Structure formats: structure tokens, C-alpha cells
Length: 457
Image 1 (cartoon, helix red, strand yellow):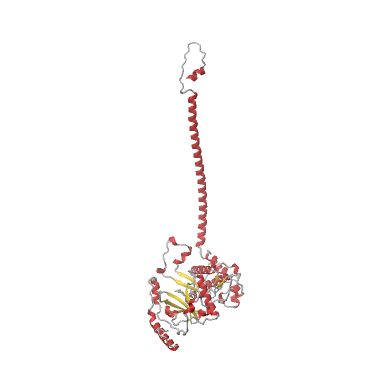
Image 2 (cartoon, rainbow, N blue to C red; image 1 turned 120 degrees about the vertical axis):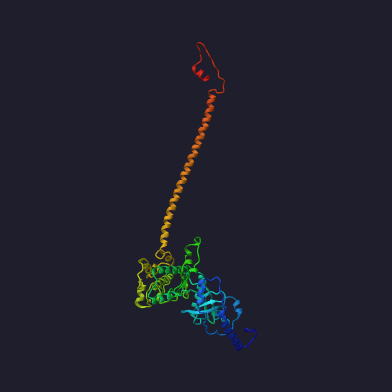
């Protein structure tokens, strides 16, 4: 069935549907929604982008049964050979420009027609069915699906297949790749300074920590796989002091570094390793020693920061390559602080077990000096809390002793009062206070003793 709704022969079907798609392509550029919630700077960026589409050759005609879709998850090969005359890519996205080319394929900057937002769409160059390219493409999709969302990993939205090509919809990073920034710096004779290098190392380490804690390793960390997102002043959200914590600091960051291109990702527990770029490859991976795979990512990250610091093109083999694997950083055009330089050397240590983990890098006081201040203040606070607790215990003991003493004094006074009252009553009876007094007057001699006279008195 074509758009007319009438049955037709295969030839007429192809002619009519192709004509219909061409008409759709001609009218589609204006059918893009404007998201009212996007920041003003984002809208300016969209308005400045080219609105011309680069139309690739039309897809081949192929039958597609909807019944297969309802039977459950199709086989891998069937997924990558899925075809539909109404291409999802052409239907849902407006292509603005090509922004990258890599081993996987090409990357395009596109606006999704439904939500009006910009995305990076990766499309494989080579056909994937039954090839190692298919496994690599599916591995990237699987890794994205497992990792979910993290501020320092390029976000994944969706993936599908069209005419034996894999298409992946990812977050668009408006700052391009770190490699592009390094190349631009070389042209201008400049390089990233140490404060920004530390910020870069911290953010990428956070992304690596998240990947490693998810049971995966990247195995292809390098400048071309690190992407930059830049925020304008009006894009940075206000974070109230009540909502601030150590994990939310990136909300106010103007530049975000994110790890992308997960085509070589593998499991730490059951690794299926494919060697990445030899310039950033750790020697133990080359020797097929996979006991410390996360440390291979740390090794590559150390060299990535060295390249951002101004190191020239890294060697791919021979003695210069081996010299770096012996723990020597490539020559740098700038002088870094001793602590930071030693940290980078520590990251490319010949023994992988001696290298820091990504989690240790995140906590390292060289790149996060405020942590040492925080730790010092925390110790002082703990000491003061201990002193306060001790004083409170002593004060409580004094209050208890004082209370006990007061109780004892009150009991003593009560007892004395009782004794005094009892003594007074006994004395009254003893001296005959209520007995009639007798007076005896004797003239002359008397047999009454003075004591008897006293009692009667």
C-alpha cells in the first residue's frame, strides 16, 4: 500500500512512494517544533545554525512485516537489517550539518522535529549485518543502555537500524571534541593551563569512576572521545545553598567534559578486548594481561591530559612509544607544578597496580585542594566536638554530684528537724510540762533534797 491507499504493482509502488518521500523531504524543513522551555542562548545557537539539509541517497525498497515486531525481541541480524520506506531518521529529524567522521561512521547535528531540541546522530558508514562492525555498534548501544545518565558521560537517547546501518541518537555537545580544541590551540600557539587541566582531569575521572563502578571499562580514552559542553551565563541554573552538595557542583560549571564513543567498552569480569588507539594503549593490554583493565583507562587519561597540556603527537610504536610505557611523560611546552606533574606520571606508571583508580583521582587533593582544607577543618571540628562532649559529660557529673549533695543536705535537715521536734516533745514530758506544779515551803529543817526542788520547779 502506498500513500494513496490503493494496491499497486511493485514497480508502481516504488515510483509512487519515492515520489511521496521526495515531496515530504521538500516540505519537511519547516516542520520543526520550537521548544518553549529552551534557554535563550540555546535558541540563538539554533537560529545561527544552517537550515540546509544534506540529503543522502534514498533508502532501498524492502518488505517489512509488523508481525515480527510483535513477536518479541528480534535477532541481532534482523535488527540491523530493518528497513522502512518512511525512514525514521528522515521523518523525525532535520539534519543541519555533519560534525564528525570516525571509524564507526559519521555524526550529524540534527533537530528533532517533535521536541525542537538538538541531538548528535551517529550513522554507521559500512553495512553491519553479520560483521564485526555490527558487534561494535551493538556493544556501544548496550553500554549506553546499562550506564544510563551521568553528567560526565555523553547521554544516550535511542538507537535503531535502517537499511543495514546502525543509527544512534546521543546528546549534542556544543563545544565539540577535546581533540578539536587541542588542534585549535596548536594553530593559535596556546594550550590548556594547569587550573583547567585539573578541572578536566577531575571531570573525566568522575565519568570513569561511574563507568568502572558499573562493571565496565572504556578502553578508548583519548582526546577525540572526550566531548565538551559549554554553558552560557543564562543557562546555568541557580542552586540554593540548601540544595548544594558535593555531587551537584557541576550544575554551576560553565564547561563540562564528557566521555563518549563507547564502541570498545567491555566487561571487567568477562572482558572481550579490542585494542584501541595505540598512542594511548597501555602496555599490559598489548600483552593481553587483562587483570587491571580499569587502570588501562587511567593510563590513557594521563596521556590525554598531557596532550591537552601541549604534548605533540604521541608515538605509535618503536622506542619513543616504549619510553612512555616506562613511565616517562612526553615533553610538555609548559611547566606544571611538581605535584600535578608527578600525579600525571603516577597515572602512567609501568606497573598498572601502582596507578591510582578513578575513584582515588576524584578524591585526590592535588586536583581538589579544597578537600585537604575540608579534611583539616573536619579534624578540627571533630576535636572540638570531642572536647564539647567531654565537657558535657563533666558538667553532667557535676550536676549529678550537686543534685546528690542537695538531696543529702535536704534529707539531713529534715532529719535534724524531726529529731529536734522529737527531742522537744520528749523534754516537755520529761520535765512535766503539763503536770501541775507543787510548791512546798518548809520552815525549819526539811527532808527534801535540792534535786527534788529542781524537778518540781
